[in-house]
Structure formats: C-alpha cells, structure tokens
Image (cartoon, rainbow, N blue to C red):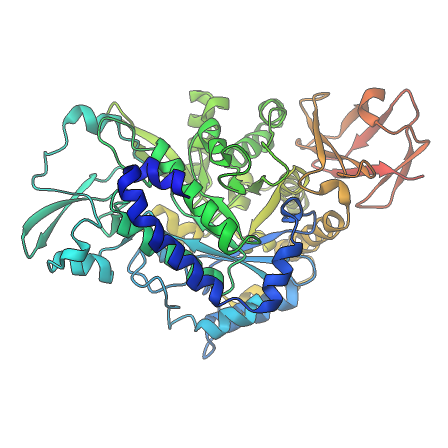
Length: 585
C-alpha cells in the first residue's frame, strides 16, 4: 500500500497518508466477528471461484409487485427460481441516486428507501453471495460532497477537477482524452466562489472525483469497507478506466489508474481477504486484461467485454472463426484471477472490447441489424471529432432474433440458448442479466421515442407478468428458462468448468465453436460444442483433441452415448444444438 501511495502522491505525502489508512483498516478489523477471522485464516485464494459460481445481474427494483418493497419481491423470485443453481446476485446500485438508473449516487451509505433497507440486503446475503457496485469514478451533482463543494466548504474544494473557463483545456489535449460519450467534458456550475467548469466524463449529473486529493482516496476506501461489512462478497469497480486525470494523455489506463486499483486490492487483501475485486473497463481487450496486473496485485476478475459482440457476430453470421481466434488467446496471469463472462447487461452490448477483432464492415452490419431489430445505438466522440458506435442498446434475444420474424419459435429459442452456452463453457465466472433467464424482448411502444437508448435494457417487470411468462408451458420464456437451468445445473456439477480448469479452443470448424475443458486435478474432461448455424453440422473430433481415449462418450445435457475411438469420431449437431461431451467409462 505504501508503494502505491508513493506512486500517487510522492514519498512525503504518502508518509502522511498511510497512518490514516492504517487506522481505517484497524477500525474495519474491529468490526469482524471471531468466526469470520478464523474462516479467513483457512481461505485459499485459488478457491475463490469455482464451477459452482454463477451470477445473476439485476436491479433491486427490476421485478415489482404492488404494495411490496422491491427488494422483498426480488428475494421471493430469486429464491423460487434461482436458488440452487445461481449462487451470486449482483444487485446494481441500490443507493439513493439522481440519474443513470443508479449510477449517479447521492448517498453511498444508504439503501434507496424506495427499494427497501439494509435489513433486506442482509437477508439476501444470508442466501446468496452478493456483488455491490463501487461507483467510485464519480458522484451525483446532488450528492453531499458536491453540494458542499458548491457551497464553499474548504474540505471539499479539491474533491473535483475544476477550471475557471470553458476553454481552459487546449483543443489538442481534448482530442487525446478517451471519451465514452458525446457530451461535453466540462460542465458549468455556479459556486459560492463564482462559476466553475467541472470535469464530467459521463454526464452533467456525474461529477468525476479527483484522486489527486488523498482525502478522496481515504473517503472511498471507507465506503468500500463499509460495503464489505454490509455483505459484499464482490466489489465491482465501476468505470475504473477513468479514475485518474492528467492532461496531455488519454486519461485512461494511466499508471496512477492502475495504482489506485492496486491500492484497493492491497487494502482488501488485508481487511477482507475473501472479498474479490472486479473491474468494469469497457475498452479494447488488450487494455481490459491489463487490469489483472501481475495476477496477484490488481483485479481478481475483469469483465470479458470482447465476448458479447464476438458471440453475437458468430450467431448472426453462422461463422465462429473470429470468436475462435480471440478465445484461443484467452489466458489469465494466475490461478487467482479469472474472467467475468457475460453477454448482456443493464446497458447493452459494448463494441470497444472486440474492436481489434471486428472490421468496420462488421460494426456497420451490427449497427444496421440492431436498428432493424428495434434497438438503438449509443455513440462516443472519437479523437477526430466524429461519432463512433460505442454500444448496441437492445435485448439479447432481439439482437439474435428479428422481431416479427416468421422463423419458428423453436429455432429462435435454440439460437438464444446456444449463445448462452458459450459464456457458460468458457473459463471464468458466468454472469446473466436476470431478464435473460426468460429471454426478455422489447416492444418499441414500451418507451417514448426520445428515451435514452439504455432504457431498453433498464425497464422494470411486474412480478405477475414475469412469473406467468416463466410458468406458461411452451412459451418462449418457459422454453428458455428450462433449458438455461439445465445448462447451469450441468455446469455447476462438472469440475471441468472450474475457472482454473485447463482450456483449449479447438479450431476444427467455422460452424461449430468447440472448447475443451479439463478439471484442475486433471480428472474430468468436457468438450463443449455449439453449432452456431441454423443448419445441421458434422463435427470431426481429432484424436489429439480427446486427451482421453474411451470407447464411449456421453453428452452431459441429454445423456446420449456414442462411440469415439482412438482415431476420433464424427458428431452430428442439429441447428444451434449444444453438446457437452465427456468420457462415459
């Protein structure tokens, strides 16, 4: 921690800051029950994640019921439908906020009273592991911190990055700054000391914090440890890319940015060694994986942002070559790090993560199809001032299947489930946005024409409608839910899918995505096959792909057996069929 503080603030200031860091950690330790202290002594970091880990991502009020607190409604639904298959809930920011569906936080330490209270969160933590959002890049313009700044409180004067004039940043410097939005970087606010232009990376209501002020670091550290005491097993560092600002650079992925994440990791190692840090960095793959650090000093888990657009391209084109090329290079720097494998989210399908693997024509096609499928597209301002597609705002089901299509429902469901199987089979921890357990779709009349594009994936669902769709035999939601649960149940009982299990992507076909997984102890082998096309495909297993020579292999999903000798074998897959085959004897 001292090394990181010295990089951020220099030796003299670091020496002044560290005693307060130590005091904060001691206060946290004093809250620990003896039972937890003993459990931490026995904890093995390489066992932090296993094949049994599956995360459901949800808003606290995503499922609603009249006259019932949303968190109470959420608890009853996930208890009934997910418990026993999903072991972790990522509850998106559930704090009082002013905009951006929770990501503009007014009070870090309170539960939004419209959702419930801390007791509701504690009750959920007794049944699921929980992921909390550390929205620590910015605060709401209505937050106490920013309001105190506006009112001239000297303690908060350097909490934010401010300029006296709108044109204080040179045009050449502005062009270098990585922008995830099209809005202006600086927003004018009237303060007790006159007008100030404040750095706002994401919106005028989201004020960037200034970590060059060590008091900001200390305040945020206390917030994160407060979340741990309130039940967080995983801390998601939102928008970690943009934590440090230095003119003359891209203001992204700076050495100081990584030092901040490393500092929080070091503090968590001491204060809460069982808690994991996951970085949310929607950037090209090479930059994204840099947040693993050396495998021991930064994020335990990073969002696998390249996965969604590459899976989407494979399923839309019936060609998995780009996906195979990328996945063949996937690796983590240590057994204590892994990927967070997700396909859809509360935002949409980010494009930056796979930019090195997608051509301009690929991007144009994805944008065109998204708009044709009733979706929207979010843009960012590129360095040359032009607008560049940043994110596809569309439900995952609609991204794969054109609304109003005359395709058989069975084929659309099979395509959807096949895509999900890829995220479940790859090394890492799978995350599934709760609406996708029933294949959520979007009707354009559900939102006004001028609605913010991300609103498509941020709608609420009535509990009665959600349960009726899941329970209606033969409905799209029912078919998807049953098949998704079958996949998850097979995964969590297959040691080969342990995040640390050996992974080899097999490059035998452009029509069938194939990955071989092997349990960390060298035992179970599973070859996961996904037909990414609407036609029947033959897949040839080569002898060198099998590892284990067995007379009979079995599909974990159906129980079907088939011969597979030393010279290999051929497998027939129906349109969008998924097979997880393993030696049967």
